[in-house]
Length: 310
Image (tube, rainbow, N blue to C red; front, top):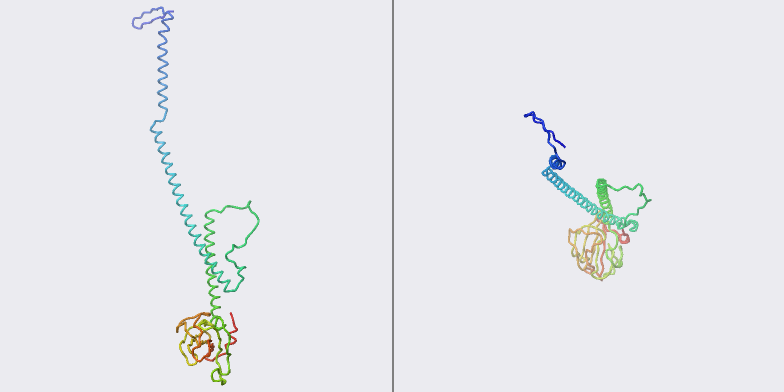
């Protein structure tokens, strides 16, 4: 093999023989250099296409900040949810208090109206029922639940107000009845002397007895037969220790021969309240109470009032 050499300056031509051994050691280094340069250039170009390390770090920071923000939003949402739950719990507690008062009102009204306690048992849950409705059943949302609770609260308040008015009307009706004398002036006793003319127990002569005598155990309670005001207490000729009560509709009741008086002038007493202790003070032959009723200033026969009961 020959290599022809050309010289631009010398304008000479020539050739030189080249053995295969020299060709290998001459061409291979040049070929290796060329391949190495290409690989280096490709490596540099590859480095240029990769994102910088700083950019990777910046993306990680953004993700971290996003996670922190979401965590804060979750905590904030959780806090607001807890506030809503606390508000609902408070509202529920208020409604339960109203329901307890309504139950108490209902029980009092049932007693005042003498209703069947078994029929109006406020301790039992109202009877309810119905067919299964799983296909059409829907869960209640929080907004719907709050709306229903507010509507129920208004209904409860309205019912409570009306029940209070009903109780007041019933009590006023009962109070008007309690202002009229009825029943016996003692818890236990028996009529020992009636209203009208009788033989006087001391003189034996006929005399008009303006009340009835109810005998009983000494120092037992003498009770008011109607609600009223204490208008007189003290010793009175023939009656010993006397209590006088004034009621509505012109009624006055008197209780005599007591051993002790338990009330004061001006005091408001209720029907059935003890006002004195039975005794034998004054003109008396033994423990009893002289019971007298007057209407519009005139005494009346107490017998029909003794038998009358509410």
